[in-house]
Image (tube, rainbow, N blue to C red; front, side, top):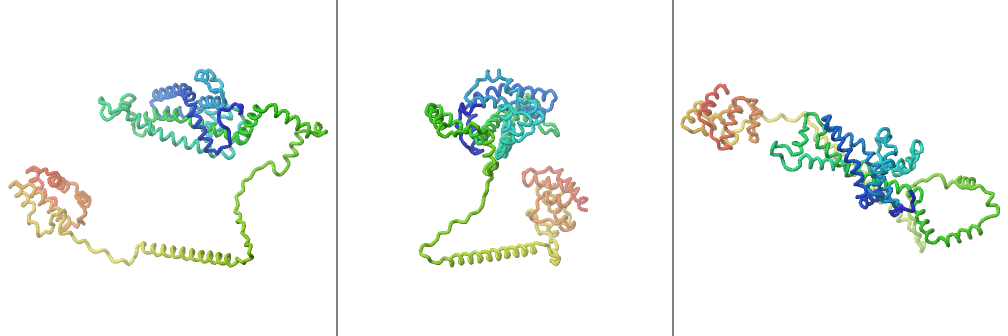
Length: 471
């Protein structure tokens, strides 16, 4: 890689700005990137789906696509690295040069170093610089200083985007088109690939098709952003921007620079310059305390005090400010103490008290659901009166009388605590009756709310069972 041939503007950027530059690079060369990327990735994705289909396990496709991500990354980086340095290759050229981007430590990337939080940032060290072993580790350590966290955040952000695209694509794939007429309730996708909603199965076939789609779309963005972060780090460490600027100046003023260089060299050279060893001189310079480390220091510095020119004593202003600050501190502590006292008082009020008076005894309500429940308001024999009303054709009145009698029995004789806010469902729950009372309430709800009168024989049967239910 020669910085002089670079096709982008080299300058010192922040890490976030550098990653944004990578997205701009992909936006500029997206055709040259995505075409070979898809030609390489799509057959692998299809093979992964075929293997998953053979074993009847959808998660196999997801695992294979995730595992082979380093292979997809190398194609994208090969195209971008050539394009950045002035060599925009076509798809055929990229595919013919498969040895250049495939024989770059792919086996190690798929095994020993598969789990990595800065994969796109570290990939150029192996693929473009050719570093291996200890040299590669030291190189990654040097480049990762101060930007390793940003590379990790890039991986995490792309992972979140993959999940978002996965959910979106799964919703599109699983609900593809309209529900199929041949099998109502299932989409055409379910009819074609089969229903995978088995008990205990985490990944479905919709996931197996949606996840590769998310990877194919987002992986070039991840590689481009990591590559741009790598370029920016090398620019900061190696001064690529300065080198490019000097080379351009040299190309414009070759003759003037040569005259200036040789003339200055002849003028400034010493007689014994040939006797000095450059390495020794460099080592002597580097022994100075200014070299060999860098440090960032943050500290508070007082502002410069303005000295009054008229000689007036302004110390009383300083004393007044200190007094006000002390008063404010005292008020702050008083307020904090008041808040603590109030919190303790509130907590003591919320605690249960042992001396509280006992709750008032339950008073049966005079009416429930608009029905009078007092025993004196009911006939002596509720069942006989209801049967007589049913024989006269007054089915609603007969059913209402049975329901009133049942509620009166519950609150006045059985001690069930029913309130006006309760519903029919609460009546069943509190009474614990799942037999006669349930049938009575169901018949009453159909009659009162749905306007569906019961049959005469049904009311007669409820009236006949009433005495035994409330014996």
